[in-house]
Image (cartoon, rainbow, N blue to C red; front, side, top):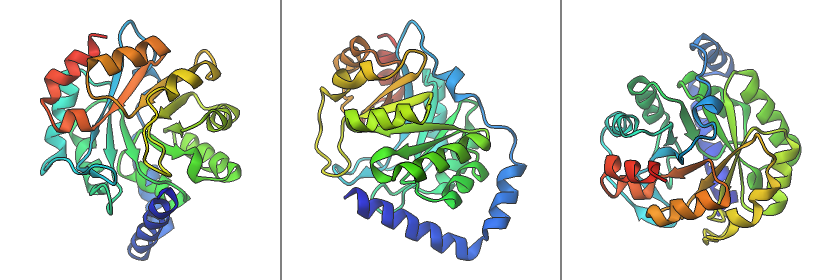
Length: 256
């Protein structure tokens, strides 16, 4: 599944490259105002921080919500206390787009994450040109040399890489990169199965000073409390927010 998602994302990026050259995109990316400091926004605090996600669908759950105006939902997230907004830009299975990212960037003053299956420098430039402050890198999707080069490029453009792991070996690879923001996803993107205890097993491998993000398997306050007790500084949440009252749900999570 992960290989298919990455291949599809790269194919779609190559189609966009036919319409907008690498040089044109690079110029647009370099013209953007400086990216916001996501590490500061997500730094450990006396409560759980939340990366709130604009998410219409997923391969595991199918259709989740109609979101005709992602910017309006993102504004609610910011008003509700989210520290950052994640925007799914993958088109085929998650029904997102770069247009969603651009709209959200204009609507909020907090950091915005491009969440997609990134495997190419062109996609990194797209993220910056659309106004992203963070870019997701999935360890399982990339050989280490590609992970390193994309990680470096993201940082050179002033953005923050969110490096996502799904196992203890992948956490070790993220640490080896020197990543300052590491996410542990309870959902294995190869099989889409959930392992609710994964974060607790691997959190101690993440060095002090690195922001720890727990991803997936967050449906209620008890899930947030479990992640907090295991050492998470932030949770990335999509489904629970888009299928319920986003502000009330956020505020409940922020009380942990």
